[in-house]
Length: 152
Image (cartoon, rainbow, N blue to C red; front, top):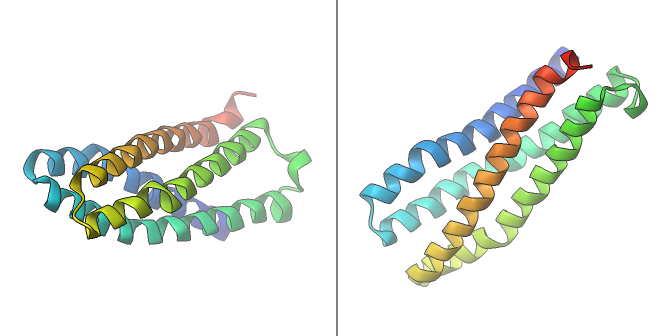
């Protein structure tokens, strides 16, 4: 159980912490200091590196979470409602990320390659909104996961 919890928490820190840094620190600075061609190219490069870690985090979260539920806690019928909420919201976050990855992020990459800065800016804005949503969901899940057991 210790290994599963550790892997689970590290994955959460990498994914949610990365979104927090990108949204709260990097985005406003890049927006204020960089012209669109440089800023949009920067975001493509940042996402390329970060999204690899998000994919690793997603796999690790699913494997470690299901391992804890079924091998350690006795299955879905034996876990608290806060774990059910965490799982449902976590799956929604994963699906939202997949939408970002296969949708606006791909179109952002192509727009930057083609130097179509207007389209690239639109796609980055779509990604920004979806990452903000996932960040809020991630922080909510952390709150539910850590405090939920004390609410019953």
